[in-house]
Amino acid sequence: MNIDNKEYTKEIARLQSENEYLKSEKREEKEKLENTIKNLHSKIEVLKDKNSILEEDLKEVMLDNKFLSLENKKHA
Figure 1: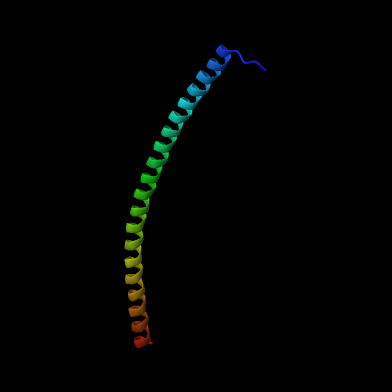
Figure 2: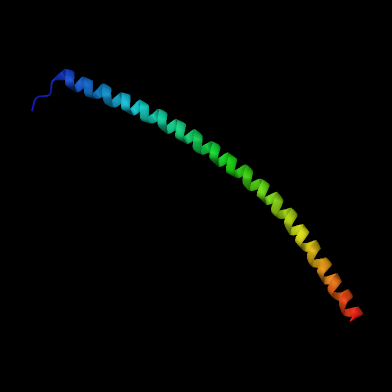
């Protein structure tokens, strides 16, 4: 099978072009993914802070309930 040199060169050029396009797409997708990861890390930190506040509030409520329970037992 004899391949024409022009066809061979044309195919190489097409593959190189496709390769460059795919590399560009890869860079864009990587950047999007990195931005998403940064965004999610930020949201995780906010949630951790909120969770910490809620845990402190819960401890306070549990102490209040314990105190009220003891008060109720004294008056019963």
